[in-house]
Every structure is written in C-alpha cells, then in structure tokens.
Image (cartoon, rainbow, N blue to C red):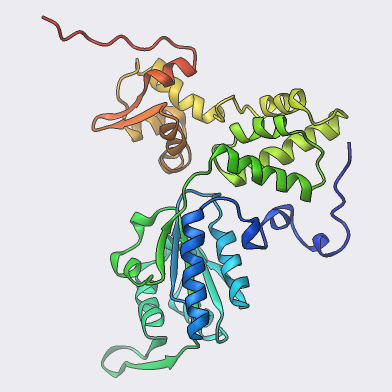
Length: 337
C-alpha cells in the first residue's frame, strides 16, 4: 500500500481537508448554475473595475460553501478574511474586523445566521453604504461617529437561511444561492481527484461504492475515502471493493449511506411507537439526541431518500423506510364499505 507523504513542500503546512479543497474553478465539481452566476458577477465587476456585490450561500453542511468563498477571493486576487457568526460576540468585534480590512478584501462569515440582531444592524450600513456607525457615550450625550470603510465583498454562508432576518437577506445584492446535493457521478469525480492528491491507489468500482454511501456530500465522501485508506493500510490489504465494504461496515455505514443514528431514528418510530406519527420532542427524548441534530443532520438525508416524512402530526417512516430496515410495510386501512 503506497502511503501519502504529507511532510514535504507546501502541503506540510496544510491539513488534509485543505489539501483536498479545489484551488481552481476547473477543479470545483458540481453546482454548475451557481458557478456560472458567480462567473458572470465577478467578470462584470472586474470589467467595470468595481468591487463585486455581496453574496449569500446556503445549504446543508459539507457542500462547498467555504470552497466557493476561497475561489471567489482567488479570482479577484484579493485577501480572504475569515470569521464566523459565533466568533462575533460584540459590536466591537465586528467593528475591529471591518476597520482592519484592506481595499478589495473578501470577508467570509460562516454560520452567519448566528449573528445577533444588534450586530446585524451594524452590518447593514457597512454592506449598503460602506460606512461604520459607531455610537460614543450613553444617554443624552451619546453621539454617532461615521467611519468610511474600504471597498470589500462580504460572502456569508449558512445552513439555516430561515434564521436570517429579511433586512440582512435583502442586502446580498450579488445573489443568494442555494447549494444542492451532488449526483453520484459528481461525487465519484471528486473522489478520483482526492485519490490522486492523496496518492491512494483505488479502482473505479470501489470509488463508486464510496460515492453511493457518501450522502451526496463531498465532505462525507472524502471522510469515507480517508477512513477506507486507513483501514487498508492498517490491515495491509489492497484498497479494493472487499476492503472498502469492510471499512464502511466498521463505520456502521450501510448501502444507502445511513449511519447508526439514522437507522435508530427509523427503528424507534417503527418499534417504540408502532409506526405512528411522532413529534420531534418525543423522538428526541426517546433517542437521547438533541432536536437540532435530528432536524438538521439526519432528517434531510432520510427525507431525500424517501425513508422518512414529516406530517402535521409528526414524523413517520415510509413504506420504503420499513423495507430498508427489514420490516414489513404497514398495512393500509381499507376505505371500502
């Protein structure tokens, strides 16, 4: 088994995830509509010698929002300043970030939905007019000082766009783009590139097997590829289909890409609640799992596969979900009189 040498050159300073991140538009697989819209936005702005307008990217985690921010900054030849919503706790934190920007910089705020409303209000004039309003003093003697900011482009990313206020969403005049799940062919192409970068000898059939179980998400696909490589190295076996299946079985990833928690959600509804609709709070208590984790991490993929559905009365497992776990599909009540 050939091991990847990450100790030399520039890659020694990078994590594996950074090494796998596409550095060129041609290497970014998938999301063709978003890439074309961004190409037009950036090309037009550069042609007018203006700063591109602000962009909001949203969608499930692991689909490439951060990578797009890096590519935009590289296309503009600009510095990328990165922060996140939870890291900006006070108005002063945001003011410090904005006043330290250089002309033409790209500011990337991940998890932007976690900004509090007070900080959002400071961000509005910065995005719209390029100024920062600072309040000095308190009470009747308080006064507002307005600082000019250098031209910059804000790229924000979120997995919960519904939590963004309407005024903030409306200020992303460059576009609001939703990243979609990837096709199996796209995931396989991403895995081929990752295998080349990490010097992992693996055949096309084994790559396809990993792609099928990757939850249509590049981050998950790369994670599974690296763990399969580790399993092959430790067990001193070639990274073939047999080894891939053993590695994924050890990770408790089934043929549909479901992990143990996914299966527990389905089996709990079927076995503990007789397949009847179950509310999120009840399901969370039965599984000893946080409601947000069930709703944001597990449910989207289960619903995408058609194994789970949300009804006005609660979560229900579909016939397909029953069959996937080896249960008989529930009998339908006859309406015939």
